[in-house]
Image (cartoon, rainbow, N blue to C red; front, side, top):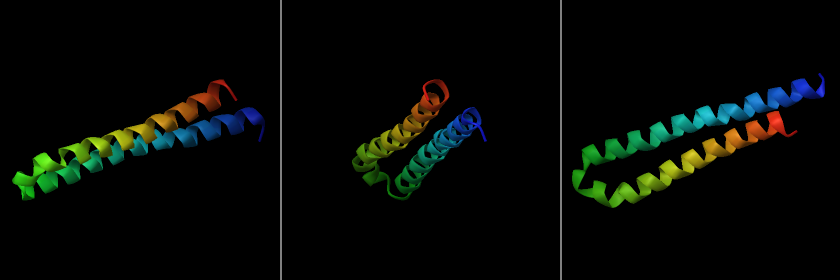
Amino acid sequence: MDAEAAKLLGAGLAAIGAGLAALGVGNVFAKFLEGALRNPAASDGQQGRLFIGFAAAELLGLLAFVIAVLLIFVA
């Protein structure tokens, strides 16, 4: 396998992380809605944690995207 093929294969594997981040964000919001429907009074107190979880999942997705772009255009 030459270097160009390995670089593109690595970028493709890194891009999988961006797709998995979308699943993580969906899971965060699904669990929040599940908890909010079970106990509506506590949902206001948990909204800050919702946004922290959302930001963490999105950060990992963006990091995977940046790694993929760096592998394609820089390495």
